Structures are given as structure tokens and as C-alpha cells.
Length: 115
Ligand SMILES: [Zn+2]
Ligand SMILES: [Zn+2]
Image 1 (cartoon, rainbow, N blue to C red):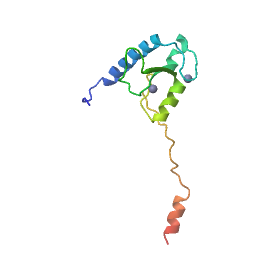
Image 2: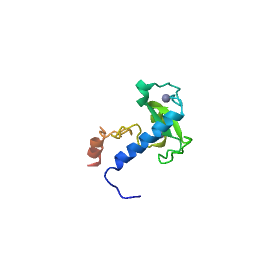
Image 3: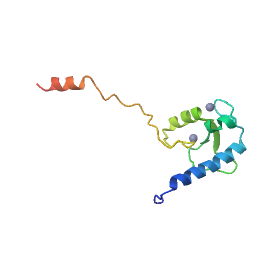
Image 4: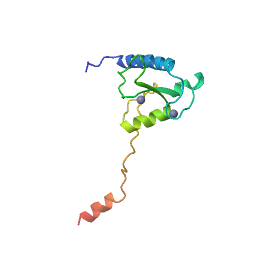
């Protein structure tokens, strides 16, 4: 891997924007999963999914792209436990349910063990 350099984030965003534009020209604005149709007004909810989950793989014929709405895209990625988000949301969301930290019996067990 190349060393981190400042600005790599915006490079990434620009590249992503590039393939998104191309995908939107290639394909009808319809979610590939739920068939929801999109227009300019809600187009930002339509995202480009990479079928092989490799964001670097952007063949000019669009064969690695699939247009998915945010919700279907989310489902697609949760299957892969992939945290890399799409569509410019820069704050990673924690999706794993927190294990219960407050075990009501933890203290009790300590009391029972301590004789
Ligand atoms: Zn959808
Ligand atoms: Zn995707």
C-alpha cells in the first residue's frame, strides 16, 4: 500500500463521483433490487454498487456496477460486513449491536464466588 497522504480522501471522493456519473449515464435510474425509480430530485439516494465489492474495479462498460437505492445497498453490504460507505456519508456508522454490558448478575456472581 502507498503511504497515506493528505487529500487521499478527496481523491477517493472524486473518483467515486466519476464512476457514479458514468454509471448513471449507462443505466436507467432504477434500483436493481426493489425497482424503485429515481429522478433528479431524489437521485442522491441512488448509489453505485460494485458487484465484486472492489471499488477500484471500474470497467468502462459498467459490468461491475449496479445501481441500488440506499436501502438495498445497505442490505447488500451488511451481508459482507463491509464498512466502506458510499454516496458521500463520511461518518462510519456502527452497526453491530452492542453486547449487553450491564449484566445484572455479574455482581451477584462475584458475591457468590467470594465466600
Ligand atoms: Zn432498492
Ligand atoms: Zn456497494
